[in-house]
Amino acid sequence: MATNLQIKFIKSLHLKKNRVLNQLFIIEGDKNIEELMHQKDFKIHSIYAVDFSKLPQNTKKLNIEEVGAKQMEQITCLASPSNILALVHYPIYSNINKVDWLQLYLDDIKDPGNLGTIIRTAHWYGIEQIFLSPGCVDVFNPKTIQSSMGSIFYVKTKIKSFKEVISESKYTDIYGALFDGVLHRNVNFKSNSLLVIGSESHGISKEVQSEIQTKVTIPRFSNTESLNAAIATSILIDQFRADFDN
Image (cartoon, rainbow, N blue to C red):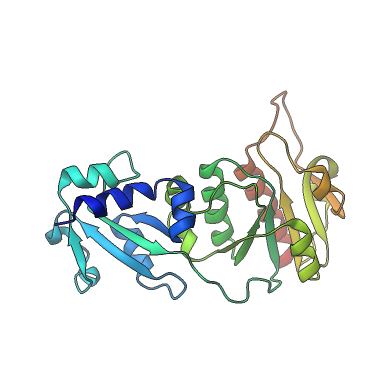
């Protein structure tokens, strides 16, 4: 049975400062942990489960610590606790600067659900890596991980300043989602490019805007103030993919 010290340590990882300090984050649920077992970039630190009889078959060979139902309620990040929880080491990626058909740069995205949805969308469309500005929400925030629905294991993420990103890779074009750009349907998107998405409330910072070569706008047909960052990203990636495939 897990000790009080272990429970206290796991609870501490709910906070970003402790995740960064220990280079560990939390993954929960049968499906996520099954996926985790097949990932070369992610190494398991420890696993905790309530009911061993309910474990997926391929997890039973692992060294799993037993926790009580009350303990799981203490350490879970979910509204309804799952049967299994793992502590995972931060990944160390290779080839993070390799230019693919499209890369994303997220400029100060603050909502963890939006970030997770963007990661999931990127995975769906075959985008292999995303750069995050230093002001973005933590990619290992439990809400980000849950909303990514396992895509966190397949899309590489790296925190870098915009200047670092554009100095280390040569892009065909740098696109930015802004209100005063060319309508997205009228842009002939080029492969090997970078797409910048700004924060939900402030958009793309002025410093980053100065480096954008092509401003892109999604047309608005009502008086709504703005479009959700994750939805805007999905619309633009879909247009990129259509141009790329043609």
